[in-house]
Length: 138
Image (cartoon, rainbow, N blue to C red; front, top):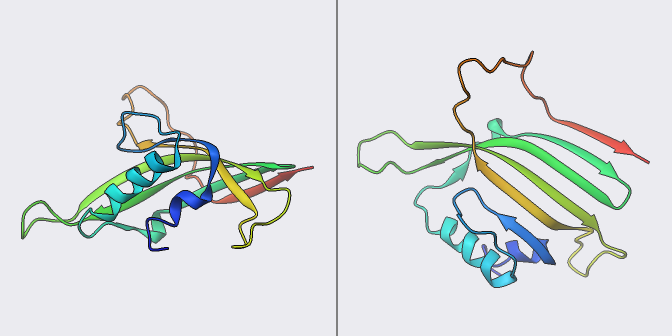
């Protein structure tokens, strides 16, 4: 299948998606497909690879991935700068009892992402920047 039709296949049948630009929670394969079809139509949309930071935690048959990313897309005006969108996300995955025919071993059961807000001035900063990490708890 052509992207974005492949994306919903990564989600469990009982998955929940609350996407970055959606004001509704999406709970069906068709709703999840509709959400990603929107992004396939955004001119020039691309992930800025060096922006991706992720921390993964694995607890047996459940895994969580949280992090942040930046996307860019074509400017609204012909000579304008690209629009940059900074976001954060959390995914929850469930390990399948046996891998699917397409090789998928984990399916997404919950996905939330949102744009990064401007923090209040009096909210202290944490030390250092977030780095990618993986932790496994047996």
